[in-house]
Image (cartoon, rainbow, N blue to C red; front, side):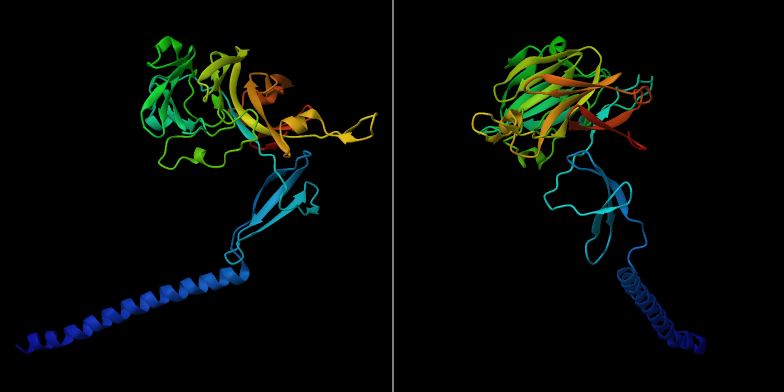
Length: 340
């Protein structure tokens, strides 16, 4: 009886000790957390800055260094390849390298199935009302795709696009575009100044329309077997852009506008080149870059003029590379271990 009473008297003491121990442990965690934040704030985060390349409009490469700071939000500095610090204006435009993938390798006997996220892309014709367009790929390894459009107000289908044009009925298999193994990946078989993306409840193609882009955002380019097609989503028409038996992938890239003023003899006035007036008043234009086995072709998609850049032998078999068009018949090719 006495031992039972003794245990009953000890239980509250043990419980109190457990509660105090837990409270002290929590307090130590809080103190250590606050201390770590204070040390980080005073001494800076214990990690190196993030560095990348910035290409100016004149083709000058700069090293961008971004340090992460919990209090100031970080600091960005620029330096030349020789280490000299450079100040850039807030409106300074960068030329970003755009991906050009290699053709998919031959599939093995056992391969992952192609899911719906890899079979669908979506965009719009930017009309009023908008027509939402989807590319629908089959689940075969070779890959055959067609377009289907939906009215954004009625939510009803308006028709289909294939190699032969616009139809109100689904396309025949032989009229679909042949992707030659590609699934939807950036810088492969579809390109345009409009945005193509995987379907979502909050599509990004509804925002940031560039009305000055040339060609207009409702023009889409498709890399098919032996040919590149140009599709006008507004007019629902298709035409051959270029024949190409060995094209691998394509993407749109920015190119700086090099204004070379010309003095008119009759009145002495200085004028800008026609391209700078007609294509854009901004600093850049867009070009269609097409990767081939031994070269990259950069097209003016409006005039259908192109510049051909031979690829060095050591770059031809890379799975992925990216390029920047500098204009004046200069191309910068980016690979994983730097620029060349």
